[in-house]
Image (cartoon, rainbow, N blue to C red):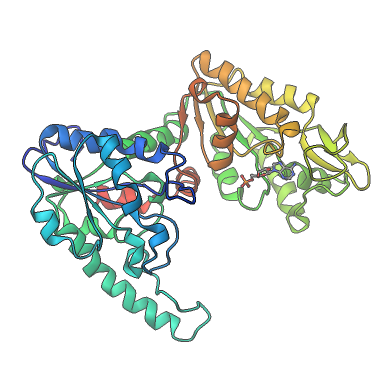
Length: 415
Ligand code: AMP
């Protein structure tokens, strides 16, 4: 079933959203992007004449009730965003009566799912090292099915619209789907968009395809780099991982970030790119600093000739030109991870050059997908969100999808 083709008139839908929004010390929402992201799905159900049961996690309460993470704090904001009456169920596993009483157009917001250890399927309060852990985990996994079944009992339909947690096999993101047949479960609009965006860069690829991988370490990106190697024409590796490559190639990198145990891995990536005919673009120069702070002294030097005591903190002007040359003619672009320590205003230049080149390519018809926390923060810092094709809401979920892994939240719907 698809959300578009479903008519919810007179029916109830339980929707898994990602309302894990940041709150300030007064419990006020500081960024409502995630609430806005779920609105198309939620409004469709209400507009059809259906009723909504909304469920989400917030923060990491680790299976225990913790008022700091209560979704009650955002009830009024959800009501305002939906322009509909919202009631609150203070115990997500004991909401049968409240759900049954819902009338068309009404909304019930459930308390934080992660107040129950069954949501994540992890025992609460027992250390992983504890000999009792495995038995406790088995018990929670068993009761997880009951928990999911209870949630399922509230509604006629299940909609999965929480891309940010779609890579987790939790009660509300995957297990619950077992209690609905194929005609009564579906992805929400946000999930559909995210899945399509990933599909665009993994299957419907228009060439040239340029992927830009940055961030701090090569070790956390290796799965994606290897998966992309079979698909891309140009692979730009930038950010902190630049210096592991420069070191592996015999350069002096001063005190730059370096994974000493990944030098062989760096060399094997260079070899693989050659064998597969991928144009691997590594920075040649960098802006080095004499301290890890915004207002340190700087100099532009080759990445393999960084003076003692200095560290590469951003891509240099020559590298930025190389990056732009590989990005501007591209028709498909994926960007994950900044080219420098963009949190410091003086070291945003490399990431800015990448964002500018992506904007040029997008204007010329490329499909550009930006994802994974920090590059999204970069694009937002530059105020360029409207100059790229798609900004993913998923961090870990997006990276796993791009690695080629099937997301449990998607698999559960497809059956
Ligand atoms: P990741 O979480 O692996 O995507 O890495 C993102 C982080 O990498 C950001 O916080 C950047 O500040 C950091 N980063 C990027 N370039 C460098 C660099 N040259 N040295 C140290 N950290 C960097």
